[in-house]
Length: 486
Image 1 (spheres, rainbow, N blue to C red):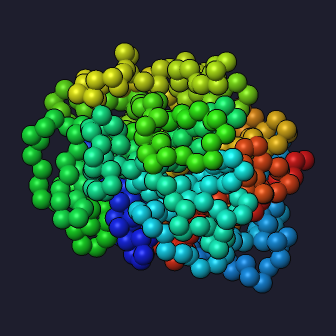
Image 2 (image 1 turned 90 degrees about the horizontal axis):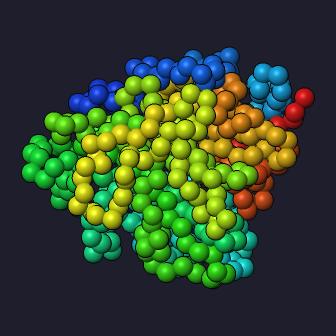
Image 3 (image 1 turned 60 degrees about the vertical axis):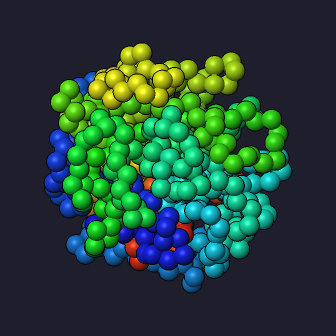
């Protein structure tokens, strides 16, 4: 599989990337997003959840063009994607295609190992806005004025603090012990939330066989002494980066930092406040024969709505529990979430972690042989990558965005009333690609039109932000959207 980014100033960061979809043929029972979309299996709908949404495809997709339409000649109004929502069917009708818009200005050279594999997360410290740029590690970068991260001229290349990074490979973080086993090879912030009392950082983590800087790093999920071949590692062995899925394990963790009005955060702040994994795959990582069962959990997003915190994630377990799933926890009086429960068969009832789970003993390996509660995937469509959601103002609706590889690699929109039953998926015009490597709105998430918050968003104007890949490389792209409710 070719690299998702073109090699450039941040070539080292590119080599650290490890979130791509797996090929359909692999040595393990589970099949994540396939390089050939048609070959991917789709999780079946679960009894009690109702019909899962299907995809609404534009009429002419025989030869999809992965390059977004240019926006330089379009007004802001002309570039907006305009949709109409049918409240009875939750179907979105395209009224105006609009066009995708890329970042303005010339990309600066950023010090440290800062990359932009994942769409940015915002943080406000004191009166200043910071943007979190993530790949296998996360750097907090200052913005010169306001919160606009879509203009490279507003990004301060000298104001960078590394908040977290993987245990191995990066010399800056190799001093950390193996206590954070979930973040051995990849440790990137995928989402943030602030409520005035606490700052929440949701991370995607990986523990896998990894070949980088001329050294082989074995995963620490499988027992020590497991013998691997020379190319049984994620890395570039000619032809571009590819993950070795037989020894890949994904994790999702949550860090919480008290919000005390501080104007900055120290180096390693996310790592130092990491609570550990908060969701776990339905199937165990390993069976009793030490053979891999599940890819784990990955590509999370976060939404706080009412009294609950929701985490959407991709469960790489084989069987009916695999796919885009959701867990939620009730927020306590102290502003912290309680135990997360997975959505299953119509309600949030299943534990998100194995029975008795703890991170107190970093040498404890028994949990790798345990699954957690079952879950009902939210979509029956194949080869999903990431899902994010936001409240649609005070309308009582929620809008979701889903990156899929099958049947057409693209980014989609959908609407729900309850965050678990979603309407038909409608493709964002211009977001399609030929495969995982060139989608222009990869790992999508929402922002309001002012780029100051992810939820709620005003239905008259909001943005879907994603990372540009392949021919769309160069930073972030967005689709500016409005939804008219009938």
